[in-house]
Amino acid sequence: MKPTKMAALLAARSFLALATVLALGYAASPSLAQAYDSTPAAGHNSSDDLKNWWRNAVIYEIYPRSFQDSNGDGIGDLNGITSRLDYLQKLGVEAIWLSPIYPSPQVDFGYDISDYEGIDPQYGTMADFDRLVAEAKKRHIRVVMDMVMNHSSDKHKWFEESRSSKTNPYRNWYVWRDGKGQTATDKGQPPNNWQSDFGHSAWEWDEKTRQYYYHKFYIQQPDFNWNNPAVAKAFDDILKFWMNKGVAGFRFDAITTLFEDPDWIDDKELKDKDGKTYLNNYGDVALDDARTNNLPAVHPVMVHVRTVEDSVKPNVFPGRRVLIGETYVPTIQDLLNMYGTKDKPEFELPMDTQVGFINKLDVATFRSKLNDAETKLEGNVPLFVFDNHDNPRIDARYGDGVHDTDITRVISTILFASKGSALFYNGAEIGMKTTPPTRKEDVKDPVGLTGWPKDKGRDGERTPMQWDDSEYAGFSTVKPWLPVPPNKSTINVKTEEADPNSLLNWYKALIRLKKTNPVFISGDNVMLDTENTKVLSWLRKGPGKQAVVVATNFTAEPQTVNLSADSAGVKGTKVKTLLKTPGAADPASIDKVELPAFGVFIGEVE
Image: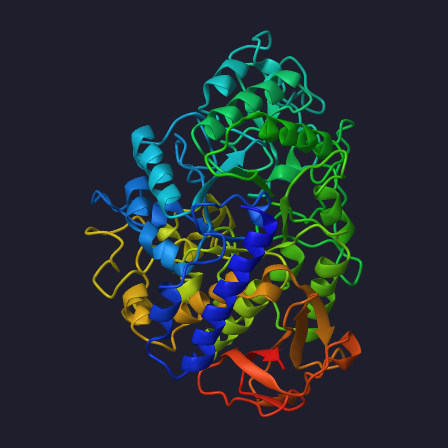
């Protein structure tokens, strides 16, 4: 479709969707969710040929083990995901990222891969995967795979060969070193002080070949040696295999940890404010990880991966695939580097974790980090993310235990109403809460097994998806692999679909605005009321587009704000409500917008 025709289509759909919002009013109308569900999102049509679809994308992470069990074994599976595609389509999702579904011993629940070109029987078969991709395509939903290139399982055939002898051809596929002070009869000490992210030394002694192997994560997850070209060649073939199966891209796990300091120098000990070393949650002396994380050698690898991405044609969906990076990096410049350059591009969407993981409701910090993302990425699109399977859910990091639903409205507004792409984790849309185990004997996650009781692991954010209020929340017909939280009686999809003021219907409305409002699709972000320490406000504007103001109250007290945008070149004193916190009043003027506790207002400037 030509750009002019697409623009006209987007504008027409935007007008119809916004007219529906204005006529019905989100907070008051029980039929708003249905009205939104019946209006297709922009780009969801037979000519879905936007080359850069990911620039304003809505991506949904699915933890397959906990999403939907279809065969009654208590573990989620591929057919379960397929059965919920209609739900995802109504939600407005454009792509689903699946955490690993490859064959695995499941020590780290899929992130210890034993075969990169298969499907774990717990999740189904390759035929089930093919059906998922085909059914998702019918609903204009892309499938993104998790790609783990830093390490494999110790049960992978490559590592079994590698540890069989020092002369095996696969020996140099992994990182092996002699110990300090090692002799013919004494293994000595680990090569250096590097620590695993899962606790204790990152080096494991292997008696058969009498060397240590390196594991940035769990003992059963040996790191690949990315200085060996054969490793890169093997992953070229793996990526091509899945692209030829129809996947729309990859999320690269732990991608910044591919390389280690070639001089094997010890990491520095961290100091507290008094200059003393301290212990981490695992009881180890806390270290920085500058020798094993975010080394420059990662960038040439991703430049090469980008060429591999471009080499496989045709794509199941018109437009390019997407490379998403798990990029926990310290500065906005580090994030910018992850995009690569015009001549040597890398990720289309490295995750901006600097915004989503501030982990406190501080207006000044949010304003600064959002402004960095919107102004310091040289035209690249930020990918905002506030939650995933590795971190406590929004309630545990931002909630106060009283206003959690309204606080989640605030967080979701930042996610979907800012310029950029949005990634969120299954269950966020209904306000699922972090529910960690209360006894060590109930812990499944290796992090919790090592870190208990200071670190209870990640089970709390991985509990089964809550579809209804039945015994096992509609997830399964038998006891699931992790317990269903007791709050499933009120926090579940079925209940929230029927409630016009629910968090689920709020998510639907926000996503629809993101995908149909012209200024949300491609407008700029400009911060407003920048001295305010209690309310975060911003403007979305663009040439020929009706400007929209957004205000989010970060406090438990009502606030009144002036959203005048004269300084940003937007005139007008009237504002038309597009979306607001249930129960909030429609403002008479842009210079006096009243927000309830943790309230949100989104309005079009007239």
